[in-house]
Length: 215
Ligand SMILES: O=C(CO)[C@@H](O)[C@H](O)COP(=O)(O)O
Image (cartoon, rainbow, N blue to C red):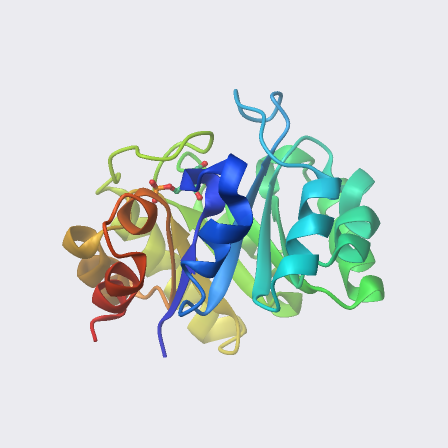
């Protein structure tokens, strides 16, 4: 079953509650946390996740694009995140293992994310304990970028590793997802699609979500 996770990075932050309601037919809500250091952009922090949690019961898929994410695992878990993704490039190797251990202790779902430059095999040391792998199909930092076609091969390779070592693990793909790219991404092995501009740039976000699901 394909899950759709609209990214609120493309929402109107002055009307965030309204824009979260607009995507309530989606499966998850994707929250992009950026620190201006791991990526060249600053977005949402712990207090905003706390406020989002108060205004929706949706599953909160929180993507931490921050250096040394281990520092913030408990804070985002307590704020109401259901799943946390930490970038393998953000603190390899000890910090990532510790971040995953803390997620387990906080009872949030555990994911690692890969920048486009990162080899699929980098997930191997962690894969058996993961709930999800997130493959980036743009360079992280901004919404509205063009999908990187060469990442289809990364998706295929990560899917093969998941099938071999942890078939229950989800495979989320994020960046440049639209009705034009979604079919190839799903065919390559994704089961969860993050979409920002394709959902919030549409006149009818609910129709855009249905189209991405292939309804
Ligand atoms: O993490 C990111 C960008 O770093 C994404 O979640 C974007 O927000 C997706 O936006 P679109 O590419 O779908 O417009």
